[in-house]
Image (tube, rainbow, N blue to C red; front, side, top):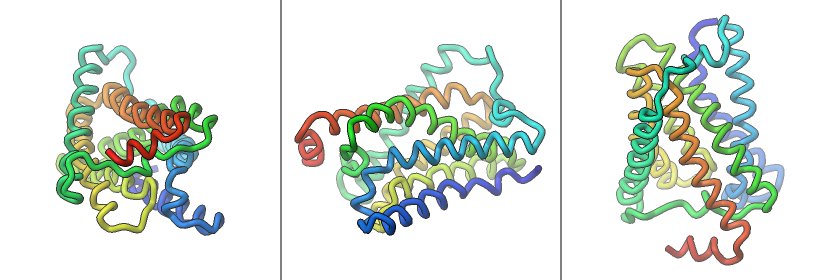
Length: 236
């Protein structure tokens, strides 16, 4: 089975459709269903991972071969270095996007840390970081960077769709929000795809990626357990 890169848009489409359907079935607006983004993401992550395993098997590979994981290749120095790079570039991208779109370096969409039922918040702390990195890095690095032959296209195309999916997590029909989300992640996804193209080693990227999502999941736990914290954080 060839042309695995054709599947790069699948998560953007899936998140867009799922949020619209959930809003329609619940009779609520997209804004009201947005707080469930982490729970929806975990479900779609599992589906994406299963789909990637299927694609790899149809292509005569395992999931690990798809992402070019090689045991013993990674050092702690690489993990620490890439993790710091992910954190710095990720934060800088968000600050710059906040300034460009909202004239506020510290802008962050309140919906991303909105409280949810406590049990789900606790489960998310474990499942969200792990499933997200296996789903996203498996798709955009394994089916993207690894499959596209042209050097520049192998970096730019997966990075574009890697950033684009975040415009719909959660889905809000607000042009400024969509542009903000895209610009927030594009610098980071370009760096990750560039690093992976050169090193073909997914593990440092996956560790750094998981830590970013862990921080987000921890904030959701905090707002879910501490009354009034969400309103306080929204006012910052």
